[in-house]
Image 1 (cartoon, rainbow, N blue to C red):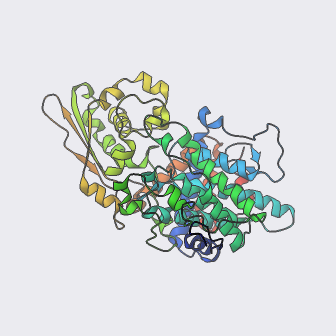
Image 2: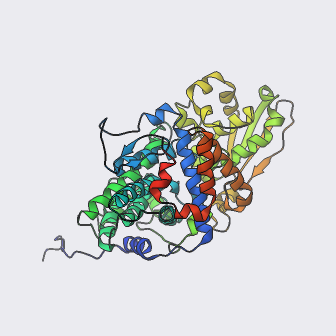
Image 3: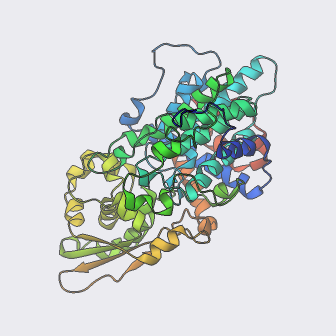
Amino acid sequence: MSANVDLNNRPDYDKVLQDIADYVLTYTITSPEALNTARNCLMDTLGCGLLALRFPECTKHLGPMVEGTVVPFGARVPGTSYRLDPVKAAWDIGCIVRWLDYNDTWLAAEWGHPSDNLGGILAVADHLSQKQVANGQAPLTVRAVLEAMIMAHEIQGVLALENSFNRVGLDHVLLVKVASTAVCAKLMGANREQLLSALSHAFVDGQALRTYRHAPNAGSRKSWAAGDASSRGVRLADIALRGEMGIPGVLTAPQWGFYDVLFSHTNKDLALKPENQRQFRLSQPYGTYVMENVLFKISFPAEFHAQTACEAAVTLHPQVKDRLHDIEKIVITTHESAIRIISKQGKLANAADRDHCIQYMTAVPLAFGNLVAEQYEDDFHAAHPIIDQLREKMVVVENPRYTREYLEADKRSIANAIEVFFSDGTSTGQVEVEYPIGHCRRRDEGIPLLEDKFKANLATRFAGQRCAQIFALCKDQAALEATPVNRFVDLLVI
């Protein structure tokens, strides 16, 4: 037999896929901490979506592909009157959730926003619940949504712990697609073979490049990319449930598999590093770890590597607000990931460019005492030249300890420090914030503020009585878990 003939022995499904499928189909969630955090995460994620509806650049993407389309038992988009097929509803929900860069975050070798998966989860659960009620069956309850959120968080987060997709140029929404595919397939009733098939298609898909997150091409695609990924997860689950065959060796197939094609680096020096190995490294089994330790963006709609810089800048605001034109230099001390991802000099082209620039996200609260979504917009930026004047005076440096503790499992800090120097030789002294208010180490301090954020976001869309009704239900763990999904979504639509 010729040495270059491929042996057509169909393999078993790659172990990575089997582990995900077995977790989703067999793991029982019993952690009160995970369920409670998931409830808070649900509130926060929905609130972020409601707030985004104030921005026309977001809402232009919403609604049916064909105007006037009527979808029986269509999934609803919170804060709107849209009733869509689950694939498009997942896209829309995911789009509004991510638009303002205000929902939760997970930081490790890779990073991302696990609540992006709510797009697919809520769309599928709402559609199925309406359909089941119409057929005389019991609807899904919000407990099923919370469990799906916990599992999606876990899949996305555990894959991110030691596997850096960004270092090979791939965007983290790949993980949203994989996680959404898995949990949506389960909600839709997939068996093990169907779930494995769906997962294999999630990896064999072409994957998004990170180009749209980085200078000089940063733009608004980063605000809808995760909705697109979660929506694709719903579509792939549907394809698998229709009996489509899978691709068992999608990861490990020599030359043609994901590892060889997309998870290796062409630079030989980089390829020698552990993070560039041609296989995933999974350091722990799937459970409830990620939801229990997820990071909430509570105070600022800002890329998470800059959250503590924003906190430090707010602290310094009283000292500098009357001396902005006397500033000679601003030193931002940070960690390596922040420098690689969000440190930018030069002109910022749009709001999406600005909310991924640590210098911009520091300058605004230094000058104005806060950072809100409207302050990224073109008109605000044009009206306040002081922002770019401050940016020009900034120096960004790495603290190796910050970089190291960012990755340590018992810390996972996201540290930043700021010091402002004036032309008369004085300075503010360095203000350091190692753990943002949304960190699990600051849960007691953070959750009341998260609830205030949710109430404020509800008020942007609903009348006071409806806001109070939704908030009261979301505060009651047992009542919320027992609520049929279709009844819960009834409260969230207009």
